[in-house]
Image (tube, rainbow, N blue to C red; front, side):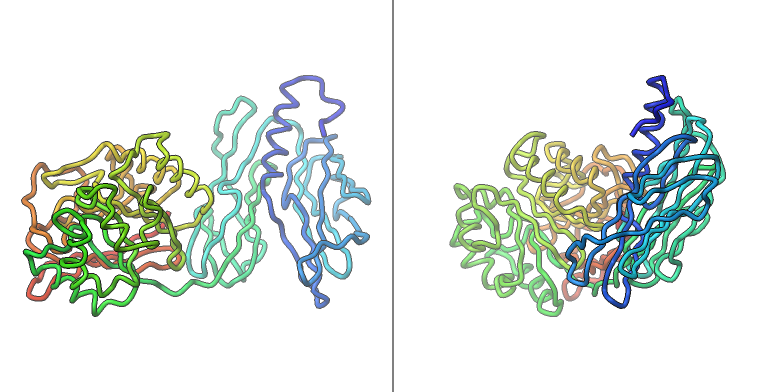
Length: 464
């Protein structure tokens, strides 16, 4: 609803920005009574200019989650600042702050209101809401702008509506304390913005372990890495070129199955270029069956603990707009989780003889845009760990994706070629597997060498 006293397009746009920011805040504080009723009010916080009006809405749910139509009582604790009618319509009267109260069936809820003289300033909060785990954190940021869209500098006052559930420090860093819900609010220069936070118990950790470039009937190194898997419980991955020389049915039966094959039931595979030495990678899809996904695609995703795992097929088209890239964008949008890991064969970045592939950059573009955390590849027969970086290879500690080249499953190891930027650890003398322990908001990695070898690499990283 626009202010009937406003007469210029500019004022309409300013007010729309302010109220739009408030409405986008989404969920709001709630109270559960002994009777099981839950009352919510939206938005959780709003900014109005003097003489503006807007409607707050309320929903009353019973213990089964069904919406109940029942009378509600609306009140405001500062009638000099604003008024509220029986339908939740608020009319701003004078500069100041107030709290909107609503009750019904023994449940109650509140929303914050700030009324200001029309200065054209807007305050927004990001993200507009968050899910965090107990003892994990989420960084909130607030942006104050003037009527011309310029960012202003001002002191920010942060607070949590329920510090037993979530706390927030002076810099907007929210920490989960116990399971429940809370509203994070920020205020400055007479404006307020808020966002809901849901805190959940930290899930148990899970293990993902594997490598690429694995089994050959002319080598025993795949038996050595399979022996490592015998002692590491969890989910097994492959990063392609699983059965040399041609990924044929006979290669899988005679070379892969006697070693890594004993872990087939817990394996989520990815194909490599050697699989496609056999037409349509028929040996690969025939061996792994449904676990390898649609034989016409070879890309799929699954959930592992709190993580979203995506397996891609770098042997097919990966350009922007290709069926695989289009599927990837849709898959990421449908599963906006905190932690995401992707596996395929050809490395975007590598210091090995095959080097860095620009063909898979569109996949990195999509993963980076979705705040993915880890990529695992093979193809170059060596181990290499990169610092978090952008799709174009710029170091990015805040949002970058960490890549592991783990082509150490058993095939003959390669010499290094041109060093790639942001490479942190390299080894080309040791076969082994990459073990990742995945938590709700972070991961630990460890390169586990075969018996008789001493090289290892370990560390930890946090999800974006």
